[in-house]
Picture 1 (cartoon, helix red, strand yellow):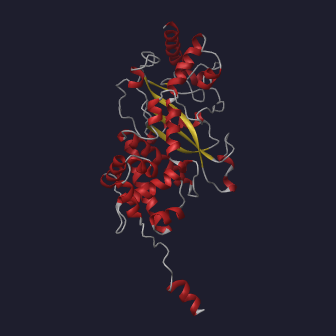
Picture 2 (cartoon, rainbow, N blue to C red):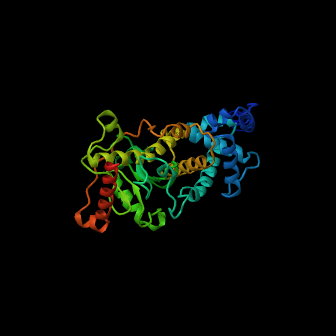
Picture 3 (spheres, one colour):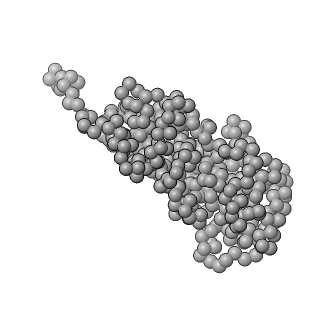
Length: 375
């Protein structure tokens, strides 16, 4: 028994003994070909360095006695970007599992603090017309008062089998339903994450715009967001004409849009799909979103928000980002998973529609549609 105790607790064989320490690995990446940084850390070198500085100076991320901030952020990004498990990160950075787990949480909390500042509109008062609209004859001047797009997406979650049912929606797997707004530069301006996969988009939307503590960026009078048929068509939120073709693949597979309603729906869909492009770019960068580990549900929700914050940080500072570039080069590029159609939502009653200002948006939509067909 004494021999067994000695072997197990006293004469322990060191495990993380590689010459290639985490610090050396990070230094090699930052000193090497720029493409390696984008591959490993999912962003350009100057963006990575700026992110580390920002988290350290503004959001309280502190180095440990032996691990610099750059290495802490690298571990976090490789978990988020590649879906690496704890053991893989232990081996890559030569740290214990407890160290990896603890500092992942430290970096996550710092990024969440940053998210409160960076997931918001750049133009707080929505005074400026987005350049994407102003510089494209397909939407100018018809959608000059549009400030962004809103949609929801489902992110897989890990939930114990006994609690999975409320999270299993149309995807057939447990998910969280995430609602987000974006501007026309593919930046997230609002996120509401954490709803169960069976939650209806309308319910999430109405809760988000009415709860003051969520600080939803409401459209000023005369401005509006674009929404699809899964959301209410109401004051400040313009939906398509129902009962007509709407989704872009429907037009690509069939004939050109015909009639006032289809022509409007095609223009509306082609502009609103910015949110689909944004979701696609965001998901393709962060593999962890599709292979979520067995964290608490609260932490899985936090990861969604944090990944959106870094998405925005990259968008604000990138010069030639591998994920954004294909979308910048091709305005019509759609991600492969953006073609899903929302489940039909319960229609609002006549009384609700009147309260929500539905009639005013009907008039505006008809006016835009008549302009589009007359051009």
